[in-house]
Length: 260
Image 1 (cartoon, rainbow, N blue to C red):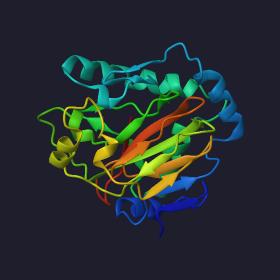
Image 2: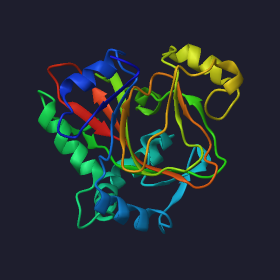
Image 3: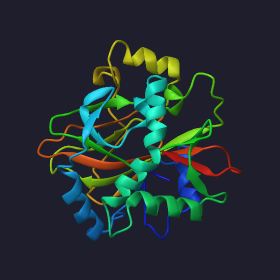
């Protein structure tokens, strides 16, 4: 397989997931995953959504929903889980009367993965999935990795073996907004060293040129391994809006687990 594997909604299979897990592919892309009618509704709802807020750890990014990465103490942990199902319902309603991309993704994963797929549970509490995220004009999503373990309870014993990411694109700027991929998975200690004193992400001077650059279109779905260094170039003319999901791999004999 190459760096970028393209498939369709009907042809997506467990082998595509395994290819990303094994680093045989950096990206699996489905063109037009979000159907045109649902895409139009999403744009109408999300561009100026009244509940858009700032991401707690990086105020330059916007979101509708509450990300697991925003958990920093027990109060925010309780708030996240208390809002999990209401936030799922809220984001689902944005696409009514059409099926939301999150619900379609959940159905597809349940169908194609041998053991199915369900919401991630942390100490018996369900997680939210389907966050809407905004990267506005001139905002750089610096090279970074994502890891659930950074926000799990200190005494939680996680069975997670790998983590994947799925973004569905609602809006992409004409200029900018490209996804950059390095194919490098630093250890957590190596990553902390690269981040240094920065609040978030790695200074671009500390990484080489990316090995792959992908420019998605509105409606596309992209699956990748977020534990490999990746970034998004600044938008030059409009906001980049995505519906974001994480997928936890707990082994071949376990269901996939989803959260945002």
